[in-house]
Amino acid sequence: MTMHILAGSLREPLPGARLAGKANPAERLEVTVLVRRRNADAFKAKVAKLSAGDRTQACVSRADFAAQFGASPADLAAVEEFARRHGLAVVQEDAARRTVVLSGTVARFNTAFAVDLHQFEFHGGSYRGRAGPITVPGELDGIVEAVLGLDNRPQVRSHFRARITKRGFPAGFTPTTLASLYDFPSGTGKGVCIGVIEFGGGYRVADLQRYFSDINSALPKVSSISVNHARNHATGDPNGPDGEVMLDIEVAGTIAPEAEIVVYFAPNTDAGFFDAVTTAIHDEKNKPSVISISWGGSEASWTPQAMSALDQAFQAAALMGITVCVASGDNGSSGGAGIAGLNVDFPASSPHVLACGGTSLQAVNGDIRSETVWNDGAAGGASGGGVSCFFPLPPWQNGLHLTSALGKKTPLRNRGVPDVSGEADPQTGYYVRVDGINSVIGGTSAVAPLWAGLVARINAVNGSPVGFINPRLYGGSGLNDVTYGDNGGYSASIGWDACSGLGTPDGRKIAGLLGAKG
Image (tube, rainbow, N blue to C red; front, side):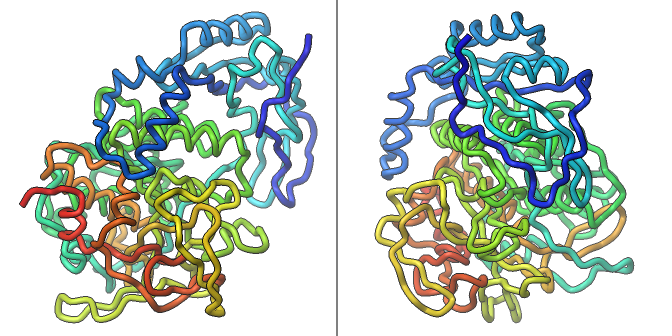
């Protein structure tokens, strides 16, 4: 049987990982297979129009999107037949998401996809992984676009920085204070659903009740959805993933207290990330119109197949009128993860999301006194930003320039990150409550739900979703330009820059730019 290499599927071990032996052949796992989309040319044409700023086409409903651009029954059947031949079970199939989830043993997956799964140990844990590409048989060549989940290494990290005290609230901002400083339009987000993507940790209802009571804000409706067997599971460690979950809920929930917040919990793997995002985008019950993601990893840590699959999901979100807000990262221009040189985080680097960087804000008597790029140095964190090595320059960034930390200007050649920014300095930070402790948390993790809350307010006032807003933000006004500071490799400048983007929100102006009434 002729086997074909799946484009973009090459994997290498994590830097510094040690080979511990072959994976247990009897270990059972689940793998997500992504198949091609129907009417791909029409889909690409619609996305291109959106990117070019064409607002004449109406948002596609989830049902219509599935009918027009989901997977064909024939392609799904081909994957099912492949699974049957290799003794793999089909545990889930979704035409809208274009996915088939297969279950089986390591031994059967090794044979099915011609891989050799091993166990690796690294500082902080171990994972099941592989080296080399994935292959598919001839009858699936051109049908299958990605195979995710064979490797279960930790794919992303949260983007928050915390300082914690056990007595009372430490100095910092409430989200409502920041909404006032950024002149957010009035509103509660009533009738809007905000989707929040998480990869570990959880929330406690008692903490949410206490937090919103303490800041005199209404308690939003919060629920959770399990993806790939992950669930809401608070660890009890406020410095762990609970901090991310509570920060996201409390910031978005304070800004839009009458919005419904749905948290999608998934495993921290490439398959978990893809399945969480596509579950939220295609959620016919809750219908989130804005999604907040505060997790990411350097582009170098992702396979091209995974980045392409997720970017296609974000394109689908754009066509369905869903705004996706993503933290740009807390490791400055390096992208973190011990990778040398200049790097950006994915999924913030997708051209179809709103990438959210960080600033350090000082306020006096309810007014902003100064705002600079957040940069506490290598140990303290800095606003993520730079230039993608994977995604081309989107049309709405044509003509922009990079300003290096030395002040040299060069044309922007690929997707630049971030698009916008907001307060992220943990020294001033956001009031939160995590695992019974009042805390101040910063990082770009806080900026994504801040922007998501703003979008939710505008969606509620408009009575319809604003959708993919990047072309309008770049083509209009509505942001406070940040012109001082740097993130290591890049300096702030007049206009867009690779550490603060276009700047921080002037909420009422943005609402007007996005068509809000009143």
